[in-house]
Image (cartoon, rainbow, N blue to C red):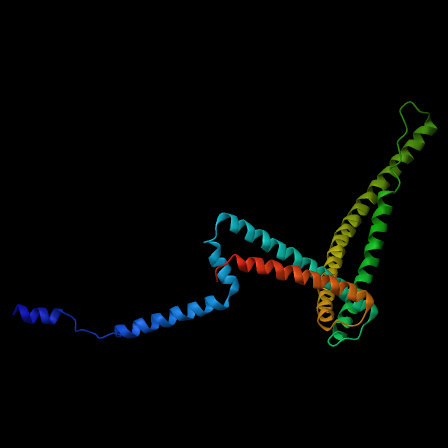
Length: 238
């Protein structure tokens, strides 16, 4: 009787994946991780960072900062190359669309700069506007009293106009801030286009004396970056 009850309570055995298949899947996963590790140099550097001595870590951070500085200098030179290509309208493959985009940005920027100048002149003119008329002092004659009443009226009119002027000036100031922000955005877009032009010029290397000076500087930066990367690689066992 007990045996029959135990057989009813015990669930039937369900066969799962065989152990050899689990070990096979685990081995495939380990191999994939290993291949990714071999191909990704940055990943290896980050992993090795934890095993480097304190001195090597400090050196590695210093070298990485140097690379970032050199790359920023290179981008600045690319921008300068792009400006020269745009100014001289050098015909290179893939530059015509960039020329048109920069032309459109330049046109918008000129309109905004004109508006900015007008707003600044209007605000400057408001700041130098006349002061309110001064009332007459006590103890003056009847004629002086009449002039004082007139001055008070002029004073009231002045402050009414001043309130309107302040409201208008506030509107101009808000518009001036927006115009300056738009000009900065356009300049950022222009710099991006100039940098792209510079990359194209650096790849094609057109024959131009002014550009050649910049290309030489870019080559020097590339050489420094290569040397720094070699020093970085020497810090890693892989």
